[in-house]
Image (cartoon, rainbow, N blue to C red; front, side, top):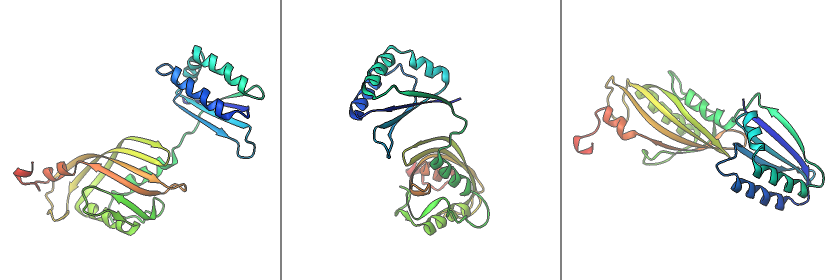
Length: 235
């Protein structure tokens, strides 16, 4: 279970505290067990500083606390505070990356039969899609729906999500696509073949959680080869 430690203090020396944390990061390289750290300043009270440190488990947090470097840095941090810091130990009971959930929803909705979904809860209206296999970028929600319709018309397909990483407003998804070639696809008549390809998509999300932009990298050449759409000289 993920474990989070909440450290609160009051200080007028935030810049010095940041430099202190930089030194701790450098000194504990290869030793520390903390996986994520956030330092925040209270908007209503600039002297109120909160640090949130995430660990894989409580045991890993205790191992991190036992590092000599952590002990030394803590004493220096106390000296920078106007009063003794307080600690709150938290076992995480829910951890959801909301941007990642939006990206997953697209990969769930894109396959299927019948009318293409509206995608209103997934993309902004002027969504911008970058696909190196296309001569021009797909721009706009309606254009994205039409592009999904092209794939649906050519294949019965599904995505399997292998990995997903979210950082800031970006979500990176590594996926495996499998399809059955049932209809015309970009001028290629149906072959009845079962085909597969791998790829990675990076999505940029807006603060309200919708996808504003996407960048695709996938094995389009391999797909064309499986469909028998390449001349021998192109292989």
